[in-house]
Structure formats: C-alpha cells, structure tokens
Length: 306
Image 1 (spheres, one colour):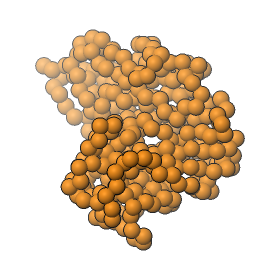
Image 2 (cartoon, rainbow, N blue to C red):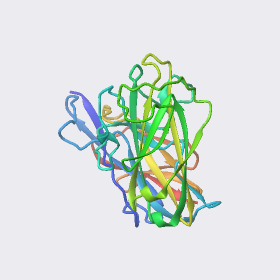
Image 3 (cartoon, rainbow, N blue to C red):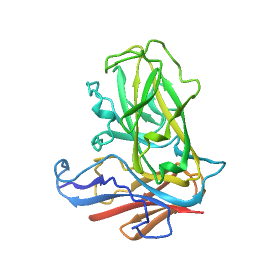
Image 4 (cartoon, helix red, strand yellow):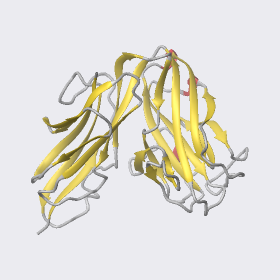
C-alpha cells in the first residue's frame, strides 16, 4: 500500500496583525500538508486548493525615497493559459482565480530569464495579482513598469488603465498584437490612484501574441506608489506544488519568496504547526523537511523583519 502526502493551500489576507507562531513578524504564508497511508488519490472535492498562497500584511516601516513597490519582480501571479474566450469577467475584482495556476514573475516562455512557464501556441494569456493598500488617499501617484512580449492590456480592479501594442477599441482573445515586440526593456505608464481600493486590489494583465506560433511570451510588472504610505511585502510558499504527492518518509523541499519589501528582513522561518522547522537568512529561502511521517500539518513561511 502506498504512503502518500497531499499538499494544499488556503489563500487569505490579513491587515492588522499576525495570527501565526510569532506576533513580531511582518508577513507570512501558510498551507496544509497531509501525510497518510493508502493508495494515491486526488484531493479534488475534499479540499479547497490553490497552487500558491500570498499573505499580505501592512508593515511598520516607512517607505524609502517616497516610493513603495506594491508589485515587483518575483511576485506570485495567477495565470490562465487555456486558450479559451473569457470575455472581460476574468479581469473583474470579484473574479475567483483560486483554480488558476500560479508562479513568480517573469512569466511566459522562450526566454532564459523566465521564472514561470506558460503554455505556448495560444493568442492570449491572462494574469492576475492581488495586493493591499491601507489608505489610497495617501498615494499621490502610481507608476507602472511593464516588460512585455508582444502586446499587453492592463486593468486595475476591472478598469483598463494601460494598453500597448494592441489596436484601439474592442479586442478579444483572438486579437493579435500588430507588431512583433521583444522584451528588451520595461515601458512606463502612469495610473490614476483614484481606481485603488482600501484593502485588496487586483492588477490584471492580458498578453497577446503577434503570431500564435511565436517562440516567446513575456510578462513582468512593477507597480510603484508615491506618497506617505507604509511599507508592504508579500511572502509566498513556492514549493511543494499544488497537488503534489509524496511517500511517507520522503524528504520534502519547502520554498518561499518575499516580494514588495522596501525595509529589509532578517530571515524566513518555516513552521509545521507551531514547531519551527528551519530558518533561512538569505534568498532563495528554502529548506528540506526530512523523513516526514504520517499526520496532518499546517505549514507556515514567515518573513521576520530585520
């Protein structure tokens, strides 16, 4: 009889504190791992699953140079690359993206710097990222930096705020970018902070190919805010992957990334329930949990301020 591990995550946001092992930490991510005896099986229908989890908290430190990175390279994006027509609902703030795939940016395929691979040979791929803003009135301006190949359209909370290398007017999932564009540098755009929500916000992007057989696709987005605002950061568990199964006694790799931080952190701590498994003081933040035995565990990745 096989002895297996099923991993799943719950996505959540918390603004005013930390309910995890250490109340002095600034941000954290958590998931659940179950180790059991029995045949390999699918957890579909038994658990509410997601690929990766981001837990966003407001940090105490001030912003640096008047700018705070709300989104930066390495952020964990949701993406949908099924080649289907999703209209405009996919970009809506209330859209449920929990079943979408997820991974750190840059996303795409065909370039050596890509961190998360997406499916080739479709015209349009969709991306979503959720971030928090405590007080939108404190933000005087938003600056968007986009690395794209080929065309891109970006929405903030369901409102189109940026378009490049796409025709004007209505477009759909079969609309091709009019020009071949290589991701040679970031392009800049301004966004009106009026469209920000207090609390969670969703930045959504659709990338269109100029040719369905294109050899590459690229998306990376940075969003900087200027104003008297607190530092924000995200920490996300990047491994194990969604639905991964292991045999009992396996050495399980656990990894995490920290993004959006202007103030430094001293380390990332990894917990199983309230037991500290390991602490990593330098990126990439990862560990090996050796010889994991039967049981159900709450896994947490905690970013500790310096």
